[in-house]
Amino acid sequence: MTDYYGALGVAQDATDDELKKAYRKLARELHPDVNPDAAAQERFKAVTAAYEVLSDPQKRQIVDLGGDPLSSGQGNTGNPFPQGFGGLGDIMDAFFGGGTTRGTRSRVRQGADALLRIECDLAEVAFGVERELTVETAVVCSTCTGEGSTPGTHPSTCDTCHGRGEVQSVQRSFLGQVMTTRACPRCAGVGSVIEHPCGECKGDGRVRARRTLNVKVPAGMESGLRLRLSGEGEVGPGGGPPGDLYVEVLERPHPVFTRDGDDLHCTVTLPMTAAALGTCVPLTTLDGDEELDIAPGTQPAAVLTLRARGVPHLQATGRGDLHVHLQVEVATRLDTKQEELLRDLARLRGEERPGVSGKSNGLFGRRRR
Image (tube, rainbow, N blue to C red; front, side, top):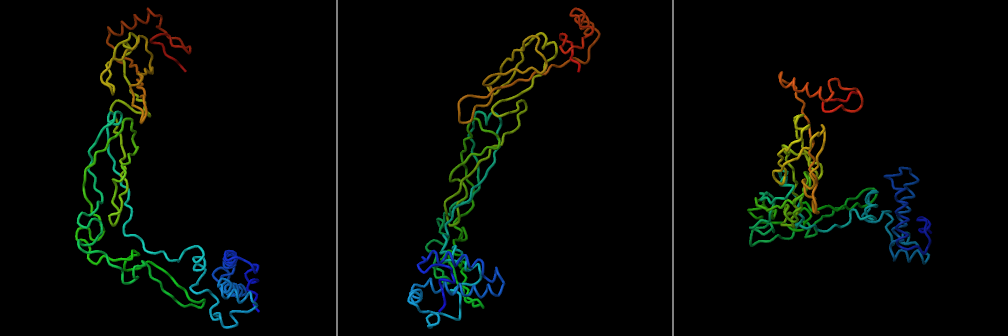
């Protein structure tokens, strides 16, 4: 008598899960698609036959009583594989879910997200702005309200798959019967067909349309950040729920200020006399016109910081700073009178021949390296 338990390498009291696990392991090692050795193929047939017997409660009871369900005519000796098994892929599908009945899929599906880009000035992203935008997306067809069929009609059950959404075919091979399942070609797996499509949306349940939206750009936005408008994206096929609309904010370059996070930077050029004597410089900030006080003796590359004159923090209190970089401009063209005055000043300050130390000798001294 054939030792079916021994063929699978399990005990007589093995559970169904243990039988399946043992067979799955051996099938991976012995299947002809993996192991072409003739001895392995013969063993694979014996292992498969053993699993077919022991996985059937009635046949297993015969084995436990000392009989042989295959030799007694109760089995199928002509096909050592369980019905519907073909190649190794079919065996693995049977264990892991591939090739099993998937059922119908819904005609109504989630819509896709949409992306829109807008440009804003520095002041708009700094303090916030509200924009009216025109968008073109898929919306629910108003004629059929998303059903896809002509008003007064409805989708009918597919006569090819009879509403199952899939069709099966059986082929015979030297390994036995191979059963395959695929989506129904007539209804594309939906299980129903639209005999009379809506003339407006052609059965899709949605059409493209333009509409306007009010978008609020919050204060403190940065270039590249996106706003999410939930449910304002593309309506899905069959009038399915819409996706989201993302609005990406792009900040236009400013002619005066450059931005570093929430801080702003700008450059103010001063003549050397103004840097030496001090002055007031008009400066237009995001908050309006201001007077920038330049202290006497201001050095080149000095930076003046105006607190809280930058960009407001996004979704938080406070603001960044405005950093004013001072650039001192040295006169390059002097007339006779101007040159004479500067020479007099240099004599008064003892700066006719600047030193070579690491420190600057007054206004006209220079550092040499």
